[in-house]
Image: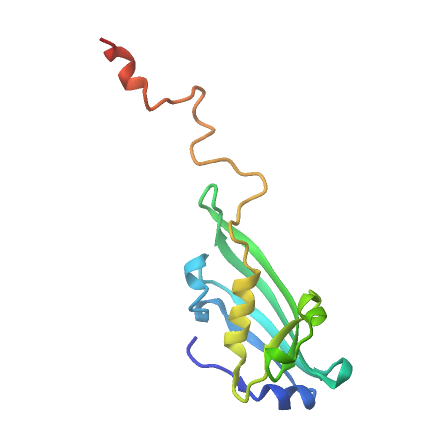
Length: 161
C-alpha cells in the first residue's frame, strides 16, 4: 500500500469515531498475488465504540468484489467480499480469559498508538479469502473434449517382448 491511514486505536474507540472510504484493489500489495485482476475498489468503514465492561472496540466492515483464480479451471471468479469484524482492543493478550479466547463472535487486537487501518483491512481480507476457490459447477480444462481415457502407459503397449 502506498500510504496508510494511522489512528490511535484506543482514542478512536473511546471517541466513537468513524472512518470510511474506498480502497483500490490495486493498492493491496499483499493480496495481489492471490488475484487474477487488480480491478475495482473495496468500500470500508471502521467504527469505534465502547463495548461491554467498558472495553474499547472497533467494528470493521469491508464490501466489494475480488477476482480470484479458480483452482480447478484456472479462470477468474468474482469473489464477493463482505467482512464484518468485531475487534476488541486489549492492552495485552495476557489479560484475556480462556472463555474470551474461545468466543468466536469477536477477535482481539492489541491496542496501538499508531494502528495502520489499511494494513488491518488487508489482513482481514487475507483471512477472508478462500484457500482453494473454485466455481460451483466447473470441469477440469479440456476434460469435456475427450471421450476415452488416456493412459501414460499406452506407448508401452506395443513393446511387449
